[in-house]
Length: 454
Image (cartoon, rainbow, N blue to C red; front, side, top):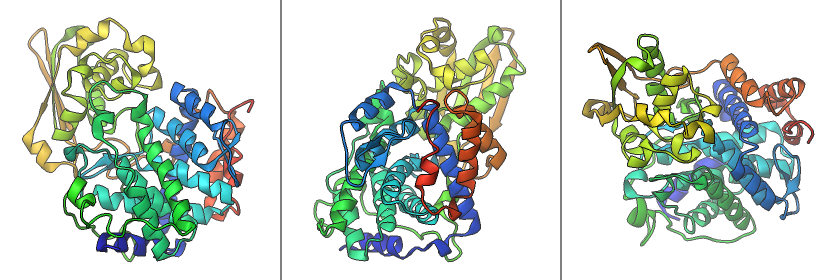
């Protein structure tokens, strides 16, 4: 195996639960609670219904359950269906580095395998923490966005490592799981360009699903390409260019779970600071007084959610929650932004384009230089009377440097559950997640993740 594969496989097979700090364990539980909440909130989505219909046609030995309905399906189909509803609202966690992505997209696949094999809470937490470490090791040194590829590739790597840890693969098997995940599954970035479709929220779940198949193959003895990163026609040559992975969590280094941000609004992560600023400005100026709005931000925010023409005229939910002009217009008009802000009726409001056309987004070179360490944004509103109002900030609520408290994460969870899960069931899930390290079978938690009447 090449050196990159060897480094990944050695770390993923050697990490033990005892290596995790109490803080890392607690943050992992917090991320898990947030992930389950996002799944419950996204359960009734159309992509979720499609994925569940397919899941009802599949089975495996052993089976895994579909969250919300409790139906049994194959491990892969359940993982995909659960991942789709986690991602649908664009409300799950985000990791900010050279690559921006949602590492909790890996959790449904890990828990599907954990459910099928009835592992305990500590094993599940260790698998999630391992997955985050491997995912982050790539996100910290590579940028697939600039190469035209999608971050689902890192999701696949991390999921394979977490599953390999869960299934107790040896070093050779782990290396093969990573190689077998990598070689057939290099996704393109078109998923997140222009007018976005349902696939935007499903691509990472497909990557995680592919990792399940690869890991099962490796466990049975299937071998993969021996130099999948550094060899001829490998990832270095075809996709990323040369890179060197940094250090992993443990032995005094913080774990990647501690660097992942939890979203305070159900929007694309780079929109969080601008949204906080526009809501502050709303306290000083009314919508009717606005002549123009100028947003200065860093390169990624500008290119990802603030530059394409489609972002000024979104027609789908997937485009709207990746449209900075739309989100700012809604927040300024409504005094906040929520899941309901992306309904078809709200997107089609004829008043919103009039306000969006007053919004200009530009890249600030200094902000770009400082990103992704900080998420600087500056917004200036000019009124029809010629007044100027300015707000600026660097870290949104929920960022690792401005974290949400346990109580705030619980509040978000309860809000996502209120229409779908009874208050008693909601509290049972909260208590189960906070005590997961003592749970003998992860199925005890997943038994609770059902909607009313299911």
